Length: 84
Image 1: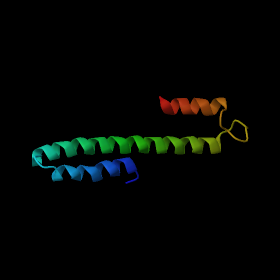
Image 2: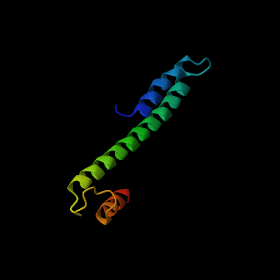
Image 3: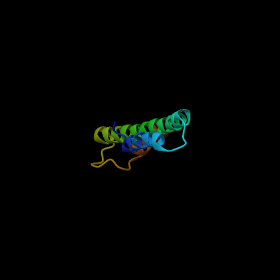
């Protein structure tokens, strides 16, 4: 798993079974919430990694003629389309 935040949430969810007075069902419900949160974080991080890869790939193949395509109109339009 690439998401360190998601790993941390999953590791910490084992903690619920060691709290006095927490039933198995309550612990499972808390773990489910944490698992959902971990998956959402991992998805967000994966989307951001893919966005950065797409920007870098576009930058390398941009036909604007600038030596470093960081702020040309084509690049800004591409990034805008990624954000939509």
